[in-house]
Amino acid sequence: MNDQWTARLSEYLDGEVTPAEQTALEAHLASCDACRTTLEELRRVVTNARALDDRPPTADLWPSVAARIGLSARAKARPAVRRVSFTVPQLAAAAVVLALVSGGAAWLIVRRGTAPTPPVLVSERPPALLNASAYPGDARFAAQVADLERAVARGRGRLDTATVRVIERNLRIIDRAIRGAQSALAADPANSYLNLHLAQEMRRKLELLRQAATLAGARS
Amino acid sequence: MELTTPGVATLRRDPDQRALGDAETADAALAASGDGRAFERLYRAHVARVHSLVRRMVGPDHADDIAQDVFVRAWTKLGTFRGEAAFGTWLHRLAVNVILARRTTLGTERSRHVDSADILDDVAGRPAAPELSMDFEEAIGRLPDGARQVFVLHDIEGYRHEEIADMLGIVAGTSKSQLHHARMALRRHLER
Image 1: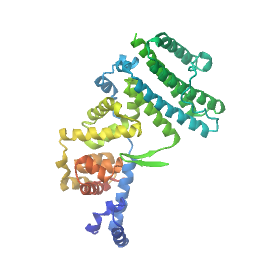
Image 2: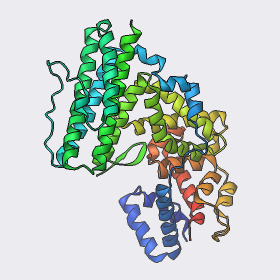
Image 3: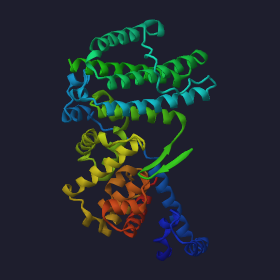
Image 4: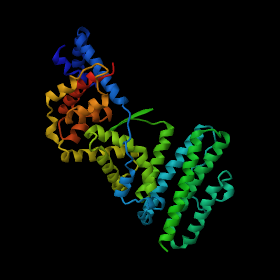
């Protein structure tokens, strides 16, 4: 084995030698069994490295992380204290994010052959608030939504109009995503992605309403 | 389609993963507003990757502590996440920064990149018989600090030599040399 070339085998493997070096090295490889063997072993090392599985820690680190960032078990069950400092720009950022989520869902629905929901982001029409009949398959979800909507309605007067607009726009985006998922599921009930997507959107709606209720309550 | 993103080895960008990425971006926005449950979801989704990166970079003894540091830092820095890259990419780069910052206190500073040839020979010279050979991960852990960090960042995490050199405070040539030494040592621990 030629040490001069052996030292360059990794660079050759990574495509980091010059064309002239590549030509010379390949000429050497054609006549050197040892270097060919080493090159193949190096290639397998790289392949092994890329195939390594990630392993979680043996112990759950979340309780320690939660404690260090001030999230107690109680805080996990209720909105964190920081949540009441929700600002309009933050809500606006969330609206953009949710628009992306909605767009992704629409793309998937279109791909699956179901008519997409028009990408209307802002409407002057009042938000279509949920009611139990909108979710005949999930009465518990509808009840939770109704409770939260009542809480938001009670504190709505304490929120400034810009905040209300952002919240309502977010709700409309989520509602469209939910309706789109439900429509697509009607045609493809066994689709696991659509079921997951619908569940995620329903969860998002609850979270947003909880935040809105907290905001409304926190400013009373 | 596959995209190679600096800092993250290879990200498959199929539609389902795009949807997952959008969901994580939404969770990041919620977490930035103080939503602990959203942050816990992000933690659950990424802890294996972060912990594996830490364990490979600094060894198992401090892996739990540093992995916790990564998520604590992420919580405080969530406001800087703009959604321009995937949340996992952002978190991964943050994790690397936390790990490298901890290297100094762990005694794995730049000087350690001048590896002992004896140590490399020790790793390389282990018996190759299957019953005596060590696990590939364990062999990575036995590499000298400099060679191990370059190997992890380049061959496992997908960083380029120029990026590694910048992160570790070395020159790209040293990064290439360390990588070659690491690979030469590890080839003895391939499964037969």
